[in-house]
Image 1: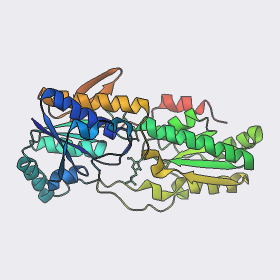
Image 2: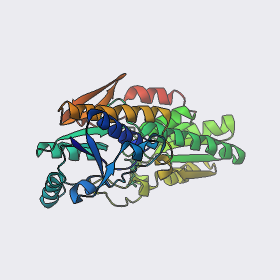
Image 3: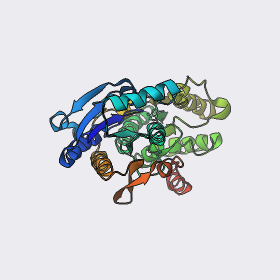
Image 4: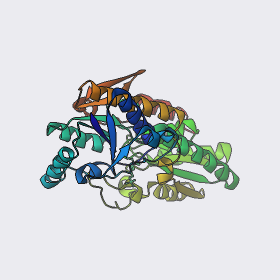
Length: 340
Ligand code: F6P
């Protein structure tokens, strides 16, 4: 078979490991692999590059995606959809492996509905794809945020300040949760919980009284209600660009007003998405990439390779995309056990 692999949506550490696994597993099964450049855009426009094991031999260690990515929605118009289908035919592709988050996988489901032979691989630093226990990219991104919070605590302690670290994650609080838990934040704000200003202020005061500083983690998706800033546009899938809201900066100002404690904020933004993947992400991405090829080889199209417990298995797109994964009450309870 001739396979095309693509990476769509925001990049994250582990994508190259998954691509490498696809290429090697495909070779073992007797398939050839090409890479579609910049996600669905490359598949739609016929932009491909050959992929041999020699092209990806050390890719497991590298961040980003060697294929490039974009947030192109190939089903935005019927003209785009028709172009995509004829490009796949012209390239004589037998199957497509689409690596991405909810948006990329939703496009893959639509491709399957229109007769495309496709298998999905979930990835995202947001960890919000419903059908899988964890997505690769999340562990790496959260590890960067964890280290950032520890650095912020050093300087917050020197100046007796409160510092808010704003992390990505869109509408899911997984990155904020992991950062807050792993780096001992004094308080963490998640999009899944209502904004409780009085509670925030009281935890900041308590931390200042006990340790002379406070470090707070805020997910970019927290709804600050009346205190919220302007929203800065949308991507092709209709998502707000949440970074533009500046939740961290708004919170730092509010903390200063409410507590009179000098406050600062830091937005680590895309720093979370770069750099080499952690061990966990390398292994998960490798297992999922290999499984995707196995699903293709077995003719199990319209499926997504996912992690369930210790096992990697294939599930239908509808099951994988049934509902996005949000932080549940049990995790919130654990998180708030450690509030200052
Ligand atoms: O979905 C991954 C993510 O990093 C989100 O956490 C964030 O809101 C968004 O992508 C940022 O998108 P962009 O890279 O287009 O600015």
